Structures are given as structure tokens and as C-alpha cells.
Amino acid sequence: MTEVPETLGEKTTSLLSVHGVTVAYATRSVLRDVSFEIKRGDLVVVLGPNGAGKTTLLRAIAKIVSPKIGTVLLDGYDISNMPTNQLMRTLSVVPQSEGSVFNFTVQDIVAMGRTPHVSPLAPLSQRDWQVIREAMELTDVWELRDRLFTELSGGEQRRVLIAKALAQEPQLLLLDEPTANLDLHYQLEVVELVQRLNKERNITVIAVFHDLNLAAMLGRCFILMHQGRIYAMGDAEEVLTAQNIQQVYGVPVVVTRHPLNGKPIILLSERSILSSRGVRVHVVCGGGTGSEVMAVLTASGCQVTAGALNRGDSDYEAAQLLGVTVVEEQPFMPISSEAFEQTKRMIAEAEVVILTDVPFGWGNIVNLKAILEAARGLIVVFNPETISERDFVNGEAEKLLKQIFAVKRVVSVHNLTELQRLLVTL
Image 1: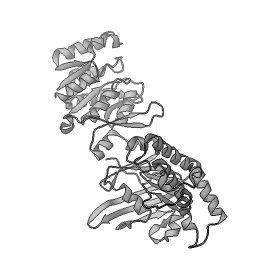
Image 2: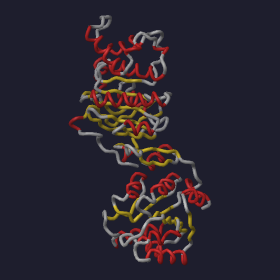
Image 3: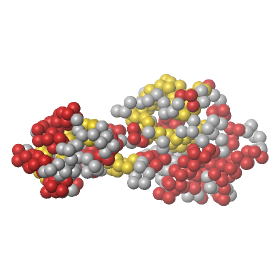
Image 4: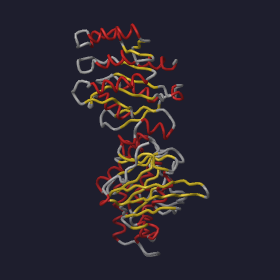
């Protein structure tokens, strides 16, 4: 479990502080001792499976439910002591749906957002109407102003609800599943709108999401919840790891990177009989030859280690993203005797050792020696017939591989499909 930091930003710029909040319905606790801080202008995505407490967290921040224990501070003020109108001038909530709206027009709906700013029964001022129009133009619903809300598409309705929230002129915007039940076009539209509001208007945003990939696209900070508690909190690389997601959601996943923006992409993987066994596998790789192998193994529920690898190697970076324990070496340095001994210990503890078709030079040849000296279980070798093409140590790598084949239990594979078929038989 990832250690939860005290804040997602600088304490001096915190807009929201949640301290030890516990919320219970009857005898069941829905939130348990939740604490975090969010700085002004941040964009935070809350993730977690159904029942994790995501919506209840938003409701506690918005004073819709009262904590049994703990406090919520908004701009330094305890919300339990704030009049509702004052609170609603500081934050606004966009629910999943508006519920019963009868036959209100779009403009009527958005105008409801001015309620915290006007006296009861008082007419809206010229400035109120300016704010309403600006909110509608920001969300591209001005042209829909005379349409009935109930006649709009799901994506249009969602933009109207965001416009209504903006009409409150909030510092903090709370979004509960803003892309739920929308097709891809409207999902992207809503995500881009929220990003624009955050960036151009400096509105602090907390958004609950189910779709992990949309969340990765949108957020800068992430809160991963599990059984009413914060399981992990931080940036994408800290939170959206295969290990965290598998632990919280209980399903095998592969986490890779988007080829254009480098953000995490979460892919659901098939369950494997390895998931229940937790087979210990050590991967000897480098130069990008082991990334997909490690992804498949972690998604299958294996306990994966790797190395030795130089920091900065693409396989080292992939291992960090996947939550794989790595024997590290300094960048561009040959593997040290200390790293060699650590690699041997990991190999000795592994039930399976996988050797990818990595090139060998004087810097990493000791990885082959570690396999020869320490491996006790099955050794899976990718494309052993090409070793001479990858041997840049005057035939030493080819010689060591022949020794491994002679004295160890070895099978060869040529691609990931063959590896997966082999693993299922273990």
C-alpha cells in the first residue's frame, strides 16, 4: 500500500483540508479516517470501485452529509459552521443527474446557480445575468438556452449542469462521475471542458471517475480509495500502478504508457491460474526487451522481480511503472559486485527465471553468470538461436548460454503468446 502524504500541494496554498473524516450510515462506516489537503488551482481525480466511498467523500466536502468524526476546512473555515449560502458561494457540486427538473429551460437551470448570491424572492440583477451568460458560453450551451432541459442529449445535459455550477462562481468544483453514461465524443468533450476551466479559470476541481483511462487523461493528482479509506494518493506514477489497481479492484491489469503524451494506459487482462498461485518470477532483460514480458507477468498475478538493470534503461522505467522490484545499477555503469550478488539472491528465490533476447556486453554479461550460478527452477529463454547476433563480448554470452542449457532445466520461447501458453501449464 502506498504511503499517503499529508498534502497534495503546499500547505500555504491549501484551499481544502480534510482531517480524520469518518462518515457512517446507521452502523456502517462509509468513510474511515480520511485526511488530505488540496492546493488552489489543482485538479484531483478520485478513483475506486463501487462502495469505496468516493461519492460520500464529495457529499461530506459539500456538507450534504455530516462526519461522525473529523472536520472539513474550506479556505481555512470549518464548513460545519458555515451557512449553506456562504458555502455554496465557495464550492459547487455537479451531480451525476439533476433528478426531477420538470419543464425548465436550459437558461432556467443555469440561473438556479445564482441562488446563493441573491436574496429570497429578489429578481436577478444585470450582473447575475452576465454571470449566467458567461457560464453558458464557457460550456457552449448558450445556443441551447431556450431548449427544455429534458429534450437535450446526455452530453448536453452534463454541460448545462456544469454551467449551472459555474454560475455559482465557485473556487472549488466537485464533479460526481461527469462522464457517466456518455459516449466517447461527449466523454472527451466533458474532459476537455473541465481541463479548460481548471487551467483558464484556475478553478480547483475534484472529480470522481470510474474510467481509469479518462481519469489518467484528466488528472494531475489522484486519490485511490478502497473500503472507505485512502489507499494511495499522489501523481499518476505513484497511484496508477498495476499493483495498486490490482489490489484495489481485484482484477489483473497491464499498465503501459500512451505513445504520444506518456500518460498511463490501464488495460484489463485475462485472469490466469497464476493469479491464485503468485508464482515468483525473475526477469533478466534490458533495452526494452522485457517491458511487455513484465506487464504480462504482473497482470497474471506473478510476484515479479527484475535486473540487474541500469537506471534510465527503458525496461527499468517500465518496471517502476508496473511496481516491479528491480536490482538497480548506476546509469551507463557495468553491474557491480553488490548488484550481482543481489541479482543472484533474487534468481535463487524465483520459481521461474525468464531471459529475454537482450544484447550482452561487458556491462551486463554478469546477469548470465548469475543465472548459471543461482537459478534453481525453470529457465525460460527467448530466442536462444539468436544469441550470437546479440553477443558483443567475444562469444562469452554464447558460451554461458550453452552452459545454462547443459546444466539447468530450460525451455525456449519465441514470443509472448508462447510464454503465456507455457505459464498456464506451470
